[in-house]
Image (cartoon, rainbow, N blue to C red):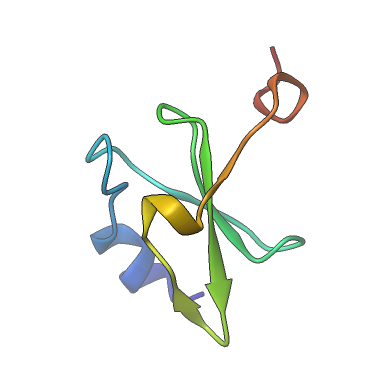
Length: 60
């Protein structure tokens, strides 16, 4: 994921920052507890496409 692109992207739900998870190819929004998929290098920033992150993933 291009770091310049990552700096511009925000969570569509909270408007907060996103972290790129290289192993799972996801953009993580810790404040929304959502993980958005990245498919073929394209972030899919749709709430209905995101999965809910578990407490374990959030470190809680």
